[in-house]
Amino acid sequence: MNRLLVAIALAVVAAFAAAWFLEGDAARVGWLGELFLRALKMLIVPLVMFSMIAGITALGDVRRLGRLGGRTVGFYLLTSLIAVVVGTLLVNVVRPGDGVDASAAVTTDPVMDKGGLGVVDLILGFVSDNVVASMANLDLLPIIVFSLAFGAAVSTLGERGAPLVAFFDAGNAAMMRLVHWLMYLAPLGIFGLVAGRFGEAMAAGGRDAFVAELSAVGWYVFTVLAGLAIHAMVVTPLLLWGLTRRSPLAYARGMGKALLTAFGTASSSATLPLTLDGVTEDNGVDRRAAEFVLPLGATVNMDGTALYEAVAAIFIAQALGVDLTLGQQVLVVLTATLAAIGAAGIPEAGLVTMVIVLQAVGLPLEGVGLVLAVDWLLDRFRTAVNVWGDAVAAAVMERHGLAPPS
Image (cartoon, rainbow, N blue to C red; front, side, top):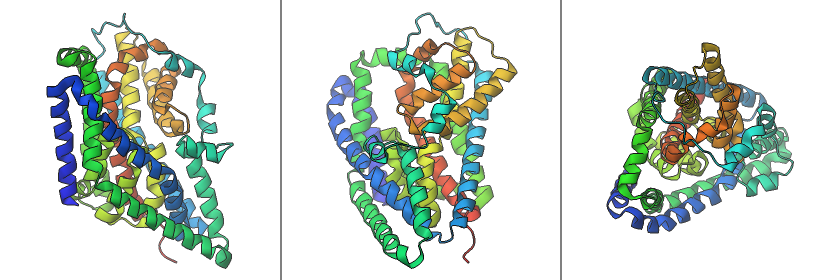
C-alpha cells in the first residue's frame, strides 16, 4: 500500500506538470478521472448503507448508539466551530478584501435561485420522502438517517434479526473488497481528474490568464489556505494526540491515499470508500466506530467548508466596503458552523451554505462572483481538510464514544 501512496502522490505532481506545460491539451485526459470518479460514486450508496447498518448492529445494545451518536455530533460541532473561529480571526488580521475591485462582481442564476433557502430547508434535508430517489441523486443525509433507523430496528429483533445482521456484515466485507480493487486505478484516475480540471482552467486563457486570475484575489486565496493549514496541521493533530495519544504523523501517513483522493475528486462522499479503508485497515481503528462515524462525517462534518464560508463572507464584506460588527461576525461564525452541517442533504450544498451565511448578515448574493473564479481550486484543499477531520473523529470516537463491552 505504501507503493500505491507513492504512485498517487506522483500522479498529482504529474497532473500539475501536464496542465502547466500542455495547458489546454491536458484537459483531454479528463475522461480518465471521470471514469474513476464514476466508479467511486457507484460504490457510495451501497457502502454507506452496508457499513452503517453493519456498524450499528455490531454495537448490540441500541443505547450504545446514542452514546456514540451524541458524542460524534458534539465533536463535529466543536471542530467545525474551531475551524470557523480560526478562519474568522485570520481574515480580520490579513483583510484580503481591502482594495479589491468589487464593481465587476457578478454571479450566476443558480446562486440567486438559492436565495430563498433557510434553516427550515436544512432541517427538511435530513429526511427524504423517497429514499430511492435520494439514492439516485446521491443525497447521503437522508440515506444515513434511514440506515441509522433501520440498523437500530434490526438490532432489537434478537434471533429473528440474525440473518439480516449476517447479510449486512457480509455485504460490507464485499464492498470493502471492491474498494481494494478500485484502489489500483486510483493513480490513473487522480491524474485524469487533476490534469483535466487544471487543463480546463488553462484552456480558458492560458498560463498568464490563470496566474492573473489567482493574483486578483491572491490574498483571499492565501487567507483560506493559511486557515486550512492551521486547522489541519495544528488544531486537528493536537486533538488527535491529546484525546487518543496517537501519533498525528503516523495517522496521517495511513490516511495518505484518502487525502490525495479527496484533493483529486473534491468530494468527501466520493472519497468515503478510501477513507474507511485508511482508518480501519491502515490505522487499525475499531470498525464499529469507523462505520458509524465516517459516513456521517462525510456528509455533515465539514470543517474546511465551514472555515472557507466564513472567510469568504467576511472577504466579500471587506471588498464591498461593509464593516461587519462584532455581533455580525459572531453570527457569521454560528451560521457557517450550522449551515456546513445541515446543508448536506440539499443539492449544491456548498452554494447553499455560502448563500445562507451571506443572507444572515445582509450581504448581497452578487458578492459570490468575487470568489467563484477560484472556488474550484480551493474546493480541493477544503475537501482534504474535511476528510482529515472525519478520520481523526473516528479515532477519537473509538476511544471516547464506544461504550465498553458488556
